[in-house]
Image (cartoon, rainbow, N blue to C red; front, side, top):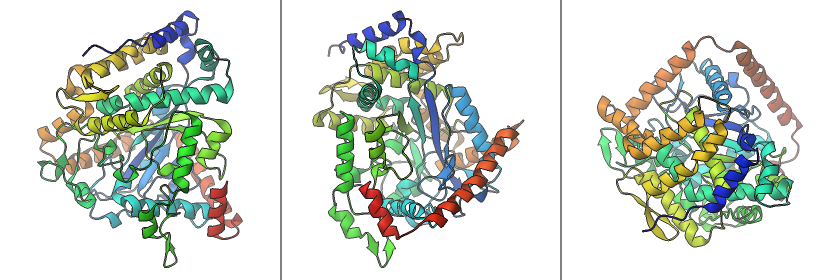
Length: 527
């Protein structure tokens, strides 16, 4: 087949950025990370102890909280203008956590530790306030709808917004007179559509969950080939976490959310939140006086919709995410496709973050026509195929209704990022973005360099099971952080004070609550 047409519009926009003296305009975007990790016992089972009190209140501590499970710690960094500052802060957060885990440790991989049953996974608790109860009931609902084991999978989310100085020149190169929300929201939705088209490359390059503990597939009621005793896998998988075995949940097949515009996105999410679903009605909302889920609709709330990337805006207290987007437009995007890497003590590294920054710029600047139903179905299939078979020799994906080699399409995307990496490297003789890009090209030339292949090679060379490897690495990471010297004592003390303040804040919320939980929910969904 003929090669794809060159994106002339993208080339013109890139040239305009450089020739207009705006080469530095892409530098200094705000980036942050949300990193999830299961707390496990010394024998590698999910911890049943409460969230460590020294980390503060999971309800009100914005940086040290929990996700689905009481054992699933979530570390949320502030935003930084450089990746190295972000990673240093994340390192300090890990050091603080490890000082308060006693014998427990953080599991070093996305796919969970040894699990005896679905019920063995404790649901996160947030206290007795109305908002705290809502967060727990929502998680109860996820458990009855999808099973708790799926919710024990962890990941790394990358939050990013383009720098303020970028937007005025961007409007000029788009020949747009729009400003503010009218400029930024459509631009971010351009990015979202192109990420849906091309985001499979993130799974190929950075996926590191090709194997799982056999207990995971047994409790899930799934079957996979056996690599060795105790280990199930897919021979060419990149990210089982992002496959239909993990977050690409088959039960959400009927939920379709458009990213053709902010209006359509909010419309579709709102419709899903307001549409009753008979199978969920059959589960019951309140049974024998106990809440099983917030409601029996297709989605309980917006966050239940699983996607590789989300448009985001920081919400006000009690404000629903869709209402926040309607009010202020898109503030940043949240990339949710990164697996926790066993090869990095904090689960992620600067190379990945720099690549993602340049890749998001590519998605923003390339032409991004609306996505129709047929194309969206093909894009969904591409993502699942790459998640489960991404390293398969000669693998082909669907593009514009035709089958194209993954390797050719990926090479085209990486070539398109060359100029963007040069812009991002301007003024830095070490050229970290170009180096990050070169490392990804090596993964195309030699599939053995991908993290998923490296993990399988490690399993085969050591003779370990997935559980044994993850257990060994988790212990090594704990020793690394406890021995790290010198610690940033000023920052660790800051974390301590914030944790103490968050406990007082939760107590104040609980003391101020009035009315019934049912009335609180009604008000929340009316807003």
